[in-house]
Image (tube, rainbow, N blue to C red; front, side, top):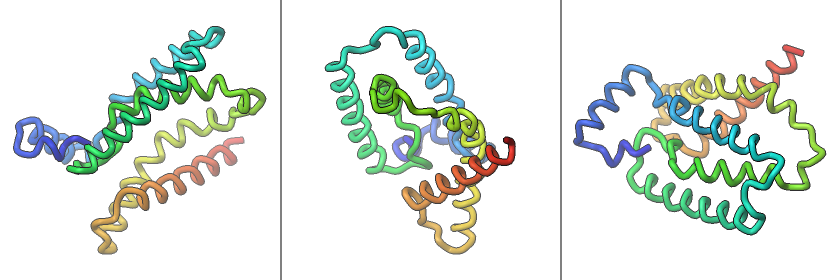
Length: 168
């Protein structure tokens, strides 16, 4: 995400070598433990309110503002990808806390998400990279961003649903 700002530095040379070796940035290796810790924190505080109702909303709004600012900064000088945004961490914490306390979701069954979460996690890089490769092969080198996201999201979701259906 920030590789555009690192051009000409030793860090960029190391990053480029890593990128050529592994093809993708593997952001999940960094984010996964943090998201798990966020989940543990929220689960440990499930009986009590983590944040007051007023502060919960303010924290979410402030973190969304920081996410917007960071997104603008990243898009001004685009790097390899745009999904390693540090402000996603507080947005995830406060959004999840807000959703956990929302009355609208209290009686809903989301067990199907748990069943498909591993499939979603492991399948999305396959569809992301194959979509990029296919469009490059067809001559659409500049295609990225929202179209690639929508294709990856659709193919990953449909495949995960198919796998969940086949498993049961």
